[in-house]
Length: 604
Image (tube, rainbow, N blue to C red; front, side):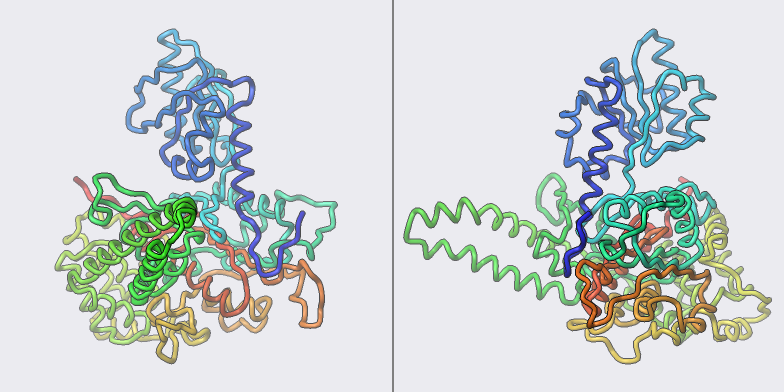
């Protein structure tokens, strides 16, 4: 195992190669040479990212590729006498596959079946296949496809359903997948010496990891580990950050267009083409790398500078005096120049669309309300604004976002006001949204304050008392005391226009400074969940010469999802402190997808 190179991140793409090899094994096991593949739609983008396209499947004997239709169990799949199902381990999917097998058997069709579950087989799925009477007709296998490398510093499980499944339905099945993914990282990069669990879910995953590892007889070689620190961050320890409006460019792209598996799709309004254009977003694109983490107010200036650079490269052609110079230019520079020009025009178009959206309605007043809630000022005006917005039937998700923020920063909303908001919300957005309020209350995003409120003044008094968030805000300086320069920021609060520093990232900063939780007792008591750490290797002192020790490489694993704003904040923290951050997560979401995952769908 190679040691980490100073100043460089470990190569996370090794995980991709492992998954690719495991998929190759599954496709070709037991003589399955020429076969058809039935693919779960949820796996299409991650699979494409891992394999690089359909050519990999063709090379491994796949003839036809069918998309699994979850709405039509009677779909007839005409093809070869061998079939592989590559699916997520879900009950409804197992029943669909069982229907396929049973109906084909009843028609006298003879076929061999293999069901490959991603990322692992579940006993519950085997039980369903047994109950449906098809267990004996198929082989079962699994592909260890958990964390997908989206960039040199981003790993994602691409399982947006995790949040609802665990935080709302209390289904802990996927925690083992999280632990397995950490184990795989450690098998490649060495055991991580320092582990910090922020929240009970993080501790659960760590305990499960130790259980899976068992009692190892091999003495860990910590100085040769490529990662020095692991943070397991329970999403429940910081619900405020996902509810804050994103203003870094990458976050706005996700809000506006939806980034899926590290790719964004631009439509005709941006590309001026009949078909949408899919763009992969990654650090190898120097133009995108220069703007992705920037506050939106800086992006146009940077794009303008890039346009001037591209024009300079293009103008080189005017000075060519030899045919050989032109030939070299065409062979080496022209293709990348044209691609860069196209990408530049797409990002300029995306910025224009974002500005149009922000100029609609009362965006400025909305942002002022959001910032006031975070600061704990203008409470009466904020509550009146939320009430007016609900009654005007403004965007439902935006209304919920402000309600949840008001609840989280004040340890709940006074009982009388909560009931009023609930009634008004149901009348404005549909009575099925009462279920949404139930879901949000169960998770802890929106709830009533303890103790009754009999009048509005009393309710407002309850809102002004010190809450856990207000105490945390003071203890770790979540609200900067001085104005942040958004062009040359010196604080991670720039990711929210200087109004707020992500709580999750500030906690990570504090722990790295202290190399543990010493001196954090005052902070601990205001957090909604426990903290736990296992520190086995202190950072070497300035006179210590131990090459290969990855004390400055940090893996932050968000269990329940994270936002691009948090990723930008951690990248900024890395630049400020010299740490190299790798961000792993169950999924990357924005405020809308975060809330919509637990909202009741409107009745049609």
